[in-house]
Image (cartoon, rainbow, N blue to C red):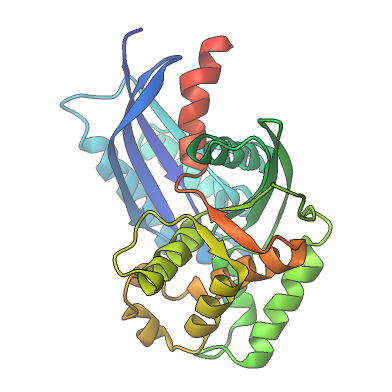
Length: 305
């Protein structure tokens, strides 16, 4: 089949991600460009999209699409996740993108977002059975892979931006603030997170999980980049270490992206508590997430539809 030049716009809670991909329907895809702009759509009070984040998102999307005039993509896919899905003023952003950039955005449901994350985890780690936790800026999506099939389990408001804003008032957070977040994770996720079963890993998706595996890899073996599995003890140690540092110290922490420094403490603590809550003993980290799941769906499932 003829390759399709496809643009993917992913409106996330922390960043807008842009991908340019050649898709061969039914066969595979090749990423030509993968870039991002941090806009923090999920940082507004009471779940509302901040005005400056809306403007920044529209500018970033318009700029990205304008770069593709020499070879315009045959298809443009645009998706939004929990920050837009839950926002009372979401239509303001969607209208500006529709009228200013000619972009129709598909707001993923909780079930769709969880399923796409599971699709990406299954493909990147060759999994047949697993529990998948996708930690974003506004929400935590839970899904499972059962005999190779993705199953959505649900969503809870434990994203890194939301938990940082709700539970941390000091820099670094106090012991009481850390304990309050731990308690919230246990109470909120207990009914959705399946208990560990033999030979079924807990898989982490998202920027925090990737940051943790990168940081632990540097500690254990300088320059390690291929590590994918973290023990509970490793997550505890790194989470605890980050929690003792100020924001400025975290921005200087080797291997940690400065743009993630303000939310990494809450994110790492949420993941640590999930591993402990389910009795998993560790975390297997997937490199890809929802947008790659979308590409897999477009590559393979659209052919069968």
